[in-house]
Image (cartoon, rainbow, N blue to C red; front, side, top):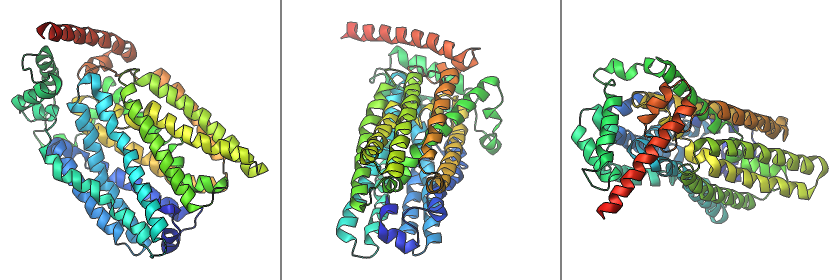
Length: 468
């Protein structure tokens, strides 16, 4: 939201309504994301925890560069570093959560991770609002202080992350089976080493990871694992397709260019824009947190299809409202556009994409694919984000509300694609999904596997109740 501050735009010579330079400032974040994804193989070398640690350390370094920047090239370089190292963390963290979470709560636990994007957005926007309100006459302080605050959360994670248990699947990969068993016992079986889930999951993990090895450096760089079988190619397709959809559904227009959109429909006051952005983030957080839980209740496919359908409707109404305001100076139309900007945020966040962005790409790939596939996830989402953030300011200034119309049709295409190709992963262990993807019809196989797992959970619940 610093792009809404006059002191920031004037300092770097950026127009308030955006231009190519504005697009580069935003798009360089996606370039850094792609660059960071090239180091994802390190996750299988020194583990998930160390990857998160080094990522947070790098974010602090990037914050120092951007916070002290006096010219636009240095500021852009700092954003590149921020993105590169943030990618290390945001690649390893959801992968870690997906691997350590029980199957029946995987979306809730791992999905909640991405909902904290909105917590960061709320804190960032609130700090920008407060700094602008009270420090706007103090030179660059109103935009530099919020930038420096980026180091706070990274610093907190840096301090505590080494106290976290490592992923049991990574421990099995490096032949530390007893440590893996202890973690599964503690976090999946309430500390009961004799619980049937412990032996069941250990056997599944050992069987799945048995063929996977990191014995040589060549193995770490070998990408054939992503495309060597029909199953792996289908998995990679879902991984990359979802990654693209999550960044290219109209959401980046609002996330990054809400001030420009509001300006186009008559909202000119900077403080008003900041307050509306805070409200947008609060709505996103509330609905995405609910959505994370709903994915473990309703299922991925239904949530994703509902989201894409709802987004198409919202963007159609935003386009209609924007057209009414711009072409006919209709105030009611402007209100309609603003309302459905916020409804879009609720639909995008709550029904599907925000909680699932790092989860679905990680759970649809096999254990031996996962680290490298999370790299393709980041590269794909980075490419989509780069295209979107670079093109958006140009498109908004050139074709205006017709750009929203484009995404109406695109989101409709996404709905159709998800219906025909996406596999349901709700309730299935990562190893059971191996069997699902080997089937001729993965969607049908996932339903059968889910029924078997539900029967086992029911039997375990009966056992626990009897023992109590």
